[in-house]
Length: 121
Length: 270
Image 1 (cartoon, rainbow over the protein chains, first blue to last red):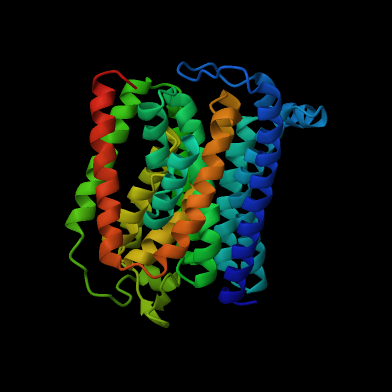
Image 2: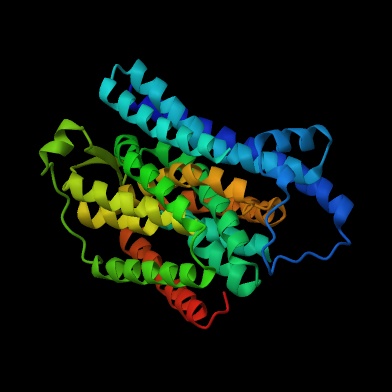
């Protein structure tokens, strides 16, 4: 394992992540448009998104019921996870490079990310 | 309409290292009248899409410096968490004006930095110990570069993270300036490393925004798909684009948006 190889792995991981996320959002979006095309959309004033798609469990239940909005939200969630997966890969990659300093630096970044995500839910 | 504007946002975001947020927020609020809070949610999504989409190319091409990126992300993620906690306590008018002032300051720095400074070798012991220096492709060969003023860059990155959490933008502008002007890193390495970092900064605050209901998939869906397409195209263009042109694009984009956001924030239209 060296820097070039780690860069190549991270690059491929990011590409795979965004493609899976985009495909999921696209499927949810197609289902949504098929079912709601007649509804006028209004986003001029803010009403917080439905509580059912504001938590992991809510999104999971919605997806299991085939709810198109929940499927789109799952895709967005997968997108949010790509940078996090990339930090995890960096921790492992730097460990394999026996670069302890950067493994620790990456682990600190991961810990802060986890704090912010866990704190939110 | 949303898709086309978002594709433009992703294209410019990938070229400048700013993320799509600087275009997406004004496009949604000013052109389409969407509430600032939805716009900020969609913008966070667009920043992550630009970052992951374009970074997949930049990292493999050897432009982004993953050591610089990871090290500075400690500062940006802490800042982002702090900023996100404060965000619910500001009105959207104040947010828009703050956003505009941030952009105005960035534009000024961009034009001021047009004089290309010579490439430098290591000038900071901390940078040497952290092995932050690297090399990047110029005309088919790899050119070495060094890194200066690590503490100053680190502190500025904390500020960049806080702005990101407050405003839902990747605050790539501040990141690019920190690396380009303060740490004296080559412009293309600065923008692509900023691009690499903004996704992580945005992800740090995305959890809080998701919970607050700012991320509505019906607004974010076309934005995400458009931005992704634009970012992948932008990443292809950057590789061969001359640095001077990239700096001008960077400056012009943020100057125009700064003026718009400040005017609309003051007149209460946002």
